[in-house]
Length: 315
Image (cartoon, rainbow, N blue to C red; front, side):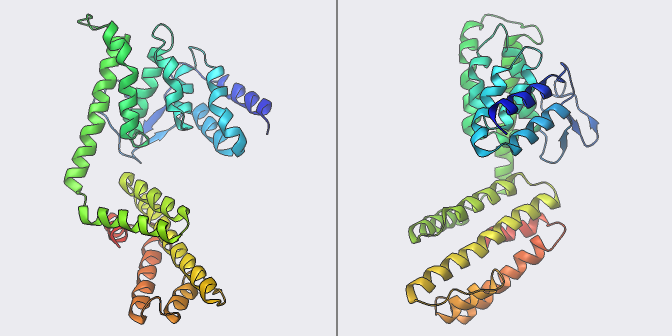
């Protein structure tokens, strides 16, 4: 696929976009996001059902790496008032939130459809926004806030009405995140251990990809709601665990001029580290049992339970 073909495919998909289309359904049926002011849906409790958006997501995922950088600019170059909201969704899906700024600040043309898309995304997929993103959305509203403060009772659907709406939605996201943090708790000792672990692994030369996998598993655990979500997080940790033992074994093998173990992905590396006195026999036995737990509760099961995932994260 080249850029001309990508542009053609995007254009074909956008030709079928219609205004006022339903973007999301809850598992219980259609949701009126505008009417439910405090709605911040849990992951897994909604479904994106709008076909053109699903096609744009799929097209972006199938793009060659060198074309992914062109995806958002192409989308934005094709924006019209009738498809602005859908394009804003697709841009956010492709990681281009900040590329929307000129359109958010275009109060006469694109501001309202941009706000609709932001409001829907915050309500239905709040987990894709970190605190920096929330601050950025608020910052983009600053010009409008200064110029329209005198409007005491803005009409529903007006720019000032949307300004207040997004402010309320962001406040709700922050409230629910704080609630989750306080009720579910964060163990400061484990968090400190995690930072020390990743720092030490980096200093010892373990692949940075392992740390990336652990961070991704952390994100998945924080947004998991179903047994399949927890299983996915546990699969990632098991993979990182395997790769850690493999890296360690390869370094020791090279240092001691020994043959690198072969066979199944974990046991030979664990046995090698025990044979080379990197691990004691007891540590080797505990390591194998932990791996068995990760495998049986994660990758070899159809789904995993939240308490299993929490145990796994701690270990």
